[in-house]
Amino acid sequence: IYLKVPTKVAAGTSLVAIAANSVLALALRFEFWNQIPILEIAAFTAAAISASLIMSPLANKLPTKLLQRIFAAVITLVAIYLISTNVS
Image (cartoon, rainbow, N blue to C red):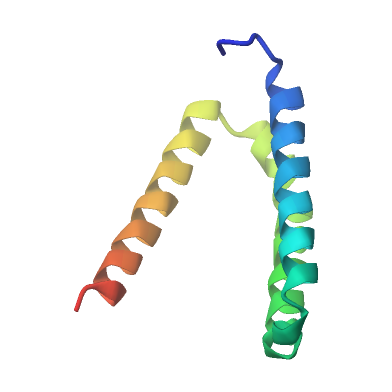
């Protein structure tokens, strides 16, 4: 907003920075590689990719306000779940 960088460029730059940070952190912590749950990560990744491919045509047909409300509801439900499971 302040630097007048287009949203797509800013998002792309952010994703590159996150990916580089993740790769570097993974490479430097090789002693913990055997603790990475590969099957769970693969299942989650496959589900996320499949859902995005299936739902993206639908998202183009729905009103933006509805999508924003659905997203807000999902985020709120996740927050409630996290709070309820982590409060001792």
